[in-house]
Image 1 (tube, rainbow, N blue to C red):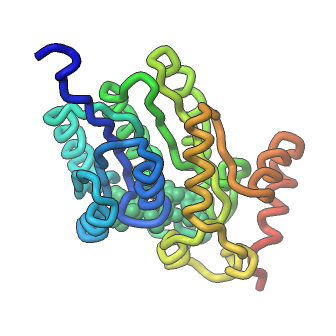
Image 2: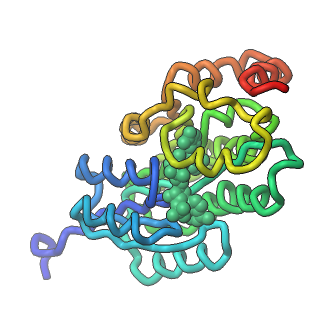
Image 3: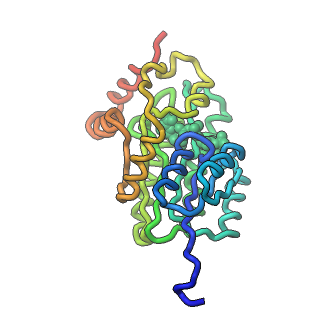
Length: 268
Ligand SMILES: NC(=O)c1ccc[n+]([C@@H]2O[C@H](COP(=O)([O-])OP(=O)(O)OC[C@H]3O[C@@H](n4cnc5c(N)ncnc54)[C@H](OP(=O)(O)O)[C@@H]3O)[C@@H](O)[C@H]2O)c1
């Protein structure tokens, strides 16, 4: 077959956390922009991902995998090795957080947050990079919480602070491959995140819902993140308070930042 008759290479977007929230919005946005011809949707729940594939009308491979587990990561790695897709986007959106003081959050949740938000995210990029084409994009989900140590949201914020540094350094490491890496740090976004985050712990150790409002719209946040990635930005924050947190984190010592965070929490 000569070059003109060769089938065009399919551009594949691999999205973790695709069964819900921002992961799902990334799939919608990338398809709407014509940024991919095929989706790889990764999370634990099959049904919402199959529904998303049907909604978007592009070929969608659903990979049900618990990315906090070695088996789940191995399953995804094997599928990549078998299919050798030409990845144009890798979005690492699988993640969760739990509010609560150290003695209120279960061991299981503490170590699962680290396994998923840190180890899972690193593993996904490590296994995906060999398949990302020149001109491709990596987006890592950080959070507004990356800018300050957060008592009573400690493990989550610390796991996302790792992602901030990891992404910024990875960006330099993949530059020579023609791949960009953007860390996306949204404020409070209206997703299923809070149904998990609020499940444990005493309410006095949580920022009350009214102080998290107005929650940002997931589709708008994702739209901005995709734009930033296409422009090759290193970091994208969504709104004024996250931008302010970013700025203050450069100007103020940690105890002052922590005092600001604690003032958001309920007191006895
Ligand atoms: N919402 C916010 O205010 C906010 C703010 C800043 C950053 N973030 C970050 O944004 C990302 C997306 O969260 P979201 O707000 O869209 O929340 P979400 O709607 O709860 O989505 C979380 C996604 O992660 C997947 N997931 C959870 N545990 C998993 C596991 N063990 N293995 C594989 N997938 C898993 C979930 O799918 P399954 O349950 O089907 O596995 C779901 O698709 C997360 O990294 C979160 O930390 C959220």
